[in-house]
Image (tube, each protein chain N blue to C red):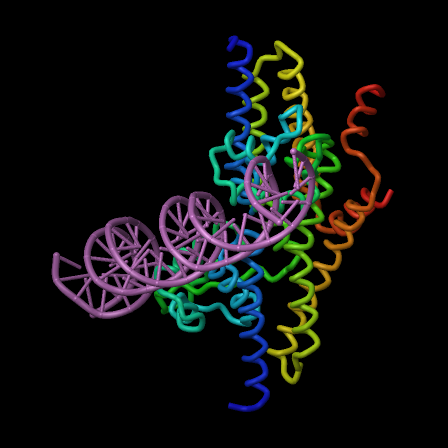
Length: 173
Length: 173
DNA sequence: CATAGCTTTCATTTTTTATTGAAGGTTCTG
DNA sequence: CAGAACCTTCAATAAAAAATGAAAGCTATG
């Protein structure tokens, strides 16, 4: 093994570990983030077995998290002719990636809030000032969530590419 | 107890429970979200003891989460003359509240990513195409994070009206 | 300066979440 | 259609996170 390869492996290892740690900070479990990081920096698609071995995780764990990443749309399966194994590779366009993550966060964080607030608002009475004040708080929260939801929706549906915009600015300045 | 009050208490209870459950979905622990919910719908400031009793939590737990909410800026202390207890009340302006939450999320989610990516980018070599590709992936992630950071920063530093009007327009164009 | 009335801390326990790995599926191949 | 080569499931286990509560720390007051 050459020095060059050693350095690549070191940087790769460091990136995977760091991504795993960071993942936990935004509600993604460590393994899922590590699998994603591994595939992000792997030029070729990897099999479940290769992933398990590189990350030292069990087959079940690898399978579960690969499945979750596919659900999120962050990775895809690939079949190689004459091979029964499934190979996995990551979406590498960071803009697309961030859009996919936004969709999941909206589903997980925003939609349940809106559902609960709507339900509460519909059910509760306003027979005195205390109830009216609480109704107002819930209405405010709901209006805010609705606004946030609309913003996120626009971002998701928009074709605006931040990276491209940044690129353009470089030429313009 | 009158029917009216029963309904208020029911709605309040439901809101607190729901907010607690939802909190876990965005990386806030259940108790912290519940304490926040309780103070959000309480017209008057409450003491630690009142909070413990209403939520059935221990004194230590109440104290820890009250401190955390104060750190976030979501609640404040109040002292009543002739009373040594501390009373707590919530920031009730939803826009201010959301700004405070944004600040925390940026700190927790965005800043550590930027730090790690910068470090990695600085340290790694690019002696072959494999290394160069990985360097590019990390650079893309870093550029993206920087852009996201700038957007969040602008929102935080802006007037709240700006948030309502301009932020949306930025994505609608 | 002693103590009553609060608040904070932290080692222990409880709860929640993630991981393992063996058993059971499924699909291809000869 | 048997068996090899994968993939999936899930009950058991391990790890991580949150909660408890008793003890220690403050601080205002007589």
